[in-house]
Length: 184
Image 1 (cartoon, helix red, strand yellow):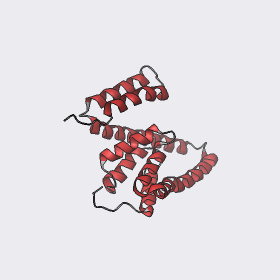
Image 2 (cartoon, one colour):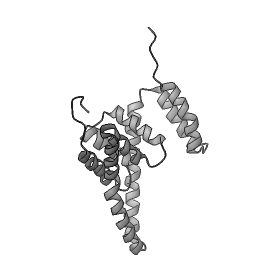
Image 3 (cartoon, helix red, strand yellow):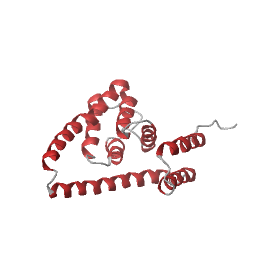
Image 4 (cartoon, helix red, strand yellow):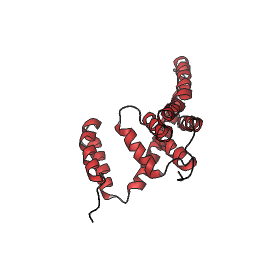
């Protein structure tokens, strides 16, 4: 976001988060969130977004709910967090309830099964897209790549659970990247 640009209003936060939620219905929230918040609306720079996403992933709960709260509070405090949270939840929750009701009555239909298979495939593609975007931002940082690679190997090869991995890798990463004063 440009230094002199005004912060988004409560309505803009609500509508922006609603756009994120509706654009990514079925998956890919991180990718759509980055596209809308950073590329389209230019509320944050990519580095700020990645920092916020990292913070959002460290807290319990859904990442994008945490990210909406982070974005809203960054610009408008508590009321901004509430506006962004409502934006990301209100309409999608209502649509999900309607879809659930429809699925309850149509779940034996083969066409519904095929549509859901297509949605899952698109969702996986969006998750991969976000992974490649984040990897590009850290490609020039060998420590970040080693931490990411070690985490991937620990989870996929050694089946280390997420909580123990975060409890070990999180403090290591924080210690390495903690801001230090430069020696004169």
